[in-house]
Amino acid sequence: MTGSYSGEPLHTVLRSATREVVLGHDQRFCLIGERINPTGRRIFQDQLRAGDMSAIERDVHAQVEGGADVLDVNMGVPLTDEPDLLARAITMVQELTDLPICIDSSVVEALEAGLSAYRGRALVNSVTAEDDRLAAILPLVKKHDAAIIALPNDHDEIPMEADKRLDLTAKIIRVATEEYGIARADIVIDPLAMPIGADTTTSLVTFETMRRIRDEHGVNMTCGASNTSFGMPDRHTLGAAWLPMAMTAGLTSAIMDTRTPQIVEAVKAADVFLDHDEWGMSWIAAHRAKATATA
Image 1 (spheres, rainbow, N blue to C red):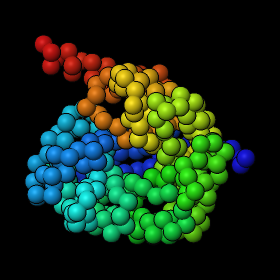
Image 2 (cartoon, rainbow, N blue to C red):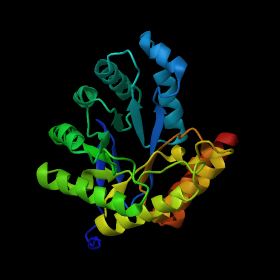
Image 3 (tube, helix red, strand yellow):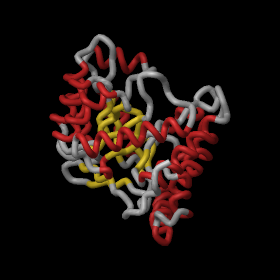
């Protein structure tokens, strides 16, 4: 058990060429649109292999319209030149929107290409606590002045106990800050949200992990929110309940599908109750805009 974090709230600042988004425990929740990702989308993969990137444009518009603050861009398509594809996708997304980008790849060369193509301050998704991954990715993050999502799992496994996740979180923060000079504010931890369809106790471990990371380290957090409801019916209702609960435990952003109004509105409502939307002004403005559009 380490000491509790007593400093100022840590702000993870992301930028496009013209817009800034801040993650923080005193800020509104950051919605990272997950849709620009070919995983599990066979038709999208086939289009990308054929050089057709038109689906990216549709995905960008849908995520932005839904309320995304940041866009995750992943081009992990087998049998393609992923570095080239990711660089082209990031260039294209920057022409379509001014939202900051989360550059998502497990391939170091692709991250390098994506970061080189990006105009701004990116979030890199992601690194684990494995020594070789930290050594490969953290110098890149430092070189491009980016922020990094880090997962507290290692060669052995995804740890199912909060204690092990906290140990690995402490290791990541120590290595990133002491060995690579990365600011604590630029380390965003993924506390590992697991599917409850397999075991309904997993969310309790994740909530405990979030609370302890917030209280002991003060860093920002994100996760793949839709993982939690995988394999369950009525996933949108589960997501709309889970995210506000996670926000009270310390989650400050999530990689999620912002095309789902039920979930986005639950997050915005939670922001009001957590006093992250001063006087509820954003909530009221959104309600008025909706009323005007309907009229």
